[in-house]
Amino acid sequence: MFKEKEENGKNTLYQIRVDFEEIAAISIRNNNYKTKFLLLFNVLKDFDAELVSQYDAFKLFTEECEKDKNTDNPLYRWTKDVINNQSKIEKYKKSFTVYVKSNQLYDKDTAYKIKECLIKLNYKEIMRINIYNSDPKNNPQPPSKYY
Image (cartoon, rainbow, N blue to C red; front, side, top):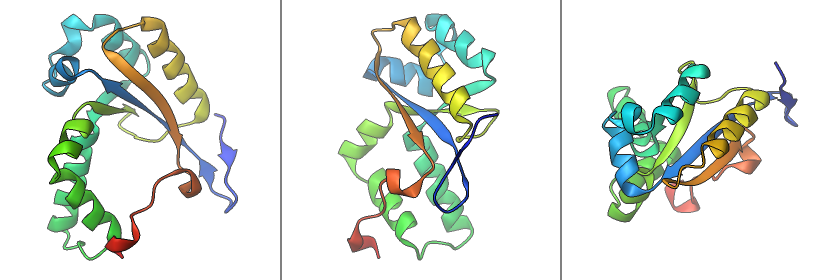
């Protein structure tokens, strides 16, 4: 399994995010895509993967923070604002993270293989496919107003 080293010595892991057009996103969020997007479903199955809506993941994160009484932190406040903002709700309901074996982060080789397979599907409903990694310098941090 290939992993890159971050500057702080931790392994860099990756994830795929896929943005869909609205009708496809609704179908996927409602888990009704296995027939309409059979090839997509088969690619995901080959990698023991699933699609998780960014909105649903953000919502679950805030609920877990609230349950654990861990709400006094910038990431919680920022995420809570996101899921309460109508324009952001619409955006994140169309954006999905590919989880592999129930993990949102995985090795670089797996991420690039999945991306390649998704591109080959050539679905017009897929608006964008991005690869992100776990290195904090490559990820947005909560804006200063949340600190």
